[in-house]
Length: 216
Image (tube, rainbow, N blue to C red; front, side):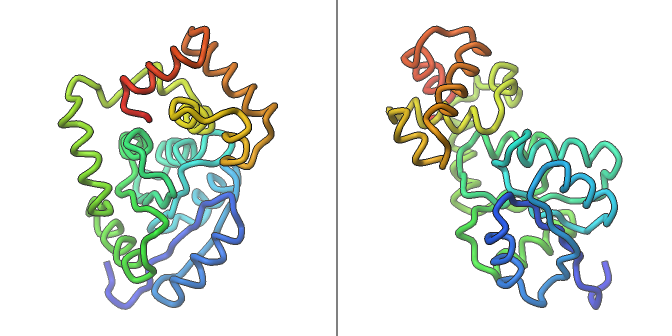
């Protein structure tokens, strides 16, 4: 890759203020060629602009970052993805890497380190926040019997997984709603969907199921 050409980066996050902040923090270290706040916008923009690296949020409506990644990689396998998320949950990391992301860092990363991670991903390296890499390795070492692919977990949307995780931690519906900035009615709908998909009857069964998979 040319040392004089700035890397072309595309931002995907459903919060406009966060995208603006990332643009400002990266400054002239890279060239931000586009951005999107929804899955369809992201897929259209990335396939049209063909950036070097996509900075990808994990939790968004309509399938989240994984949906973007899976749709784009079918036709543009040379576009590299770096997940940039508030979540450091093992299943989020594993899910994105399994789908084809080259790295995963959290939103606490500094602008300098993020620019370096973008460069390394563009060069073909796999990049993880040190603590995050250790966390994931520990999770696999502790539960080698848990496969990379989990058909039951894979059928849940990202939002349903978020609700499930908080539910398993003992949060009340009202607390989950406040934490995720959604209504209590929406929380109830997500819980109902999770129960139906996993063929369970109550939150206690869900909590045990989540604990078995180290989702809590």
